[in-house]
Image (cartoon, rainbow over all chains, first blue to last red; front, side):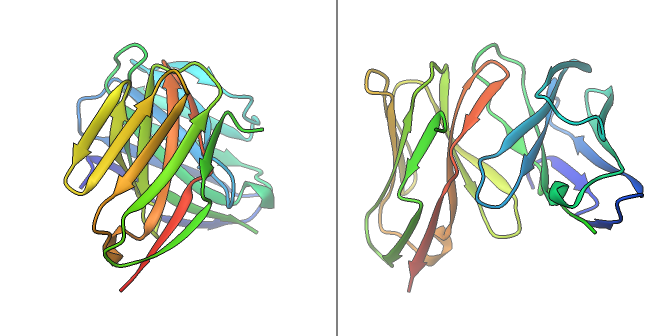
Length: 114
Length: 107
C-alpha cells in the first residue's frame, strides 16, 4: 500500500466521451503530479500542483484538464481525446522540499481511447 | 537525445547473478532516483540519492556526481526482482526520466 490511490484502474472511452481520473493521497504530502506513460517512452510529466496551486503545465493539450481541490485530491478531466492519448496515467505525491522530492506513485489508470 | 539514458534496455539474468543497471544524465540535478515498476503499472521508489552510495537489502545504488553517472546493483538476483527499473533525476519540480531497463530473472 503506497498511500496513493487512483480510480478507475482501467478506462475505455470513445473520442466524444468526457471522463475523469481521480487520485487521492493519505500521506500528508503537499505536492501532487500527473504523469503519462506510453509504451517505449520515458514518463512524461503533465501537471504539478504544490499546495493546491498549479506550478507546472508541460505543454499538455487542453483536452486534459487538471483539478486540485485540496492537497489530498487530484483529478484529471478528459474530453474529446484521441487514440494516441491511450496510455497509463500515473499520479504521484511528494513532500515539498526544494530540489529534493521523493515521489510516491499510485497504481495508475490504464486508459484506452477508441 | 533524452536527458537521462539507461543501459541496457533489456536484461535477462539467471537467478543468483549479480546485476548492474547503468544511468547517465546530461543535465544538472539535485537528486537521482531509482524506481521499480512491476507489470500492472505500480511504481515504487527504491532510492533517492545525491551523493555516494545507498544500500537496501540486496539493492545498492551509487552515484558519481562528477561523471553524471549512477548505477543500480542487485546482488543474488531472484525472479521476484523481474521488473522495469527507471532512473530519474530532478531539480525541484522538473523531473527527467530514462526509458527504463526491463529485467527478467530466470529461475
